Image (tube, rainbow, N blue to C red; front, side, top):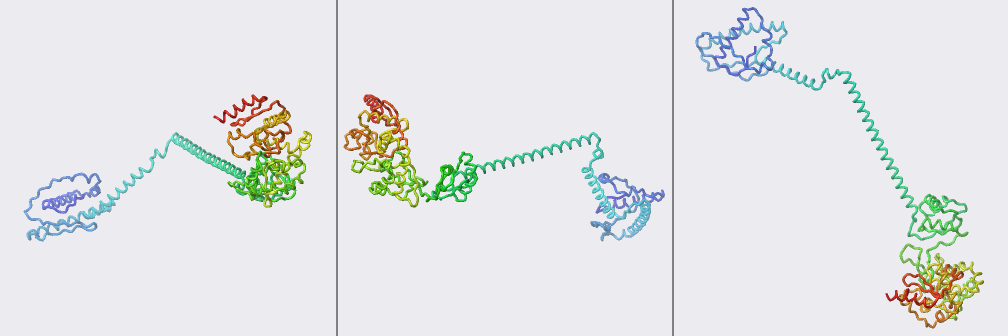
Length: 561
């Protein structure tokens, strides 16, 4: 049995303790019984927490004496706590102390021997002192506490036997659940994979379509919209659209030959002809395809530097301004190397005119002479169209190209003109008036028929246009009142209010449509016509009264309003 450790003992407690130990030892020896090992066992955690059991001390009559006071220092973990005697202990207690020490030591030795024998028999570790027992108790307590903690952890982390040995139903249900979970996971994974594949396909298809659209759109556009410099390109006979596209791409005329191939097939361009073509990087695919259908030249010609546009109904003075403008360039106000003054000087040059008369005899067979009152001999003989010019072009060559175009257009009609007892100058003079008076082919034929009716009836043509031309106002910007209030008494061969016939010559360059209308006029009973000054629509009349009403309604009233 282990007593509670204390640092200080009173006299009474020490005496009672010694006497109690002696009495117990004597009783045990008398009974010749060994101490029970349980008495030497370390009390449990719960026992140590119980309050100490009180033992009634047995009264022993002893002579009064003063017991020494011992100062017990804190015991070391591995050493017994030594007893320190009080220096002030009286001398009369020395004998008693010696006797008591001898009895205590003898009893302790006896007790230790008995306990050691019992321990050896029962394999119980001996307890020699309070400090040693305390240390051993603390170690045992720590070991038990750690073992308890480990057992608790094992209980928490290890499943019970019941959990380790589930029933068949539980195991099968868990297996089914695991299978279902695995199936769901597989389905989810497969769905994700399919979704990713679909998204990738959509992106690839969309990207390819977008790239293809931009590729084709870019290929259709001109290679360089600002570069009008033409090159002479030779297209061999029998070349396919694929081969032509490759040639044009090599010559830096188009962006992509494959786009040209599929574009011409999609637009139904076919029957490309061989020859030399002057093509520029600013041309569209449709323009190039159209030229290839028209055909090239047998020999290369100088590339064009630009174009000159001559609209229908232009006078010579207007054409002189047009030849200074390069209409084939995308640049604003692009100019040609020709001047207006050089143009007007050339068209009035007798030597040049004689040269042209000799070159185109049928066209100029009825050309009026200079002393006939004509303003410009070549007026109306330059055909309205678009003309190319090259580095070697001159003003004379440009004018000659226009005269040559007029001759080419009239060549099919020379015989018809002769059969109708007309001259080229008469046809061109009447066609020039028709060009300005009408806006469509039907009106042109009716206007031409009305002119013929008036001439057949011995009337003058009565056209305001010839007077405006004589005054130098035709083709210029004039007001409606100026156009209506002309001087019908003007002394000029171009006054067709006072002079009968076709007039001295054309007042502008008529179109082929107007020429055809003069050669094939409409058969009608009209003698008069007037055009609405706001819409240009032509109203015809058979009598002068109807004509005056139309003039008041479509001219005077609208001018005054």
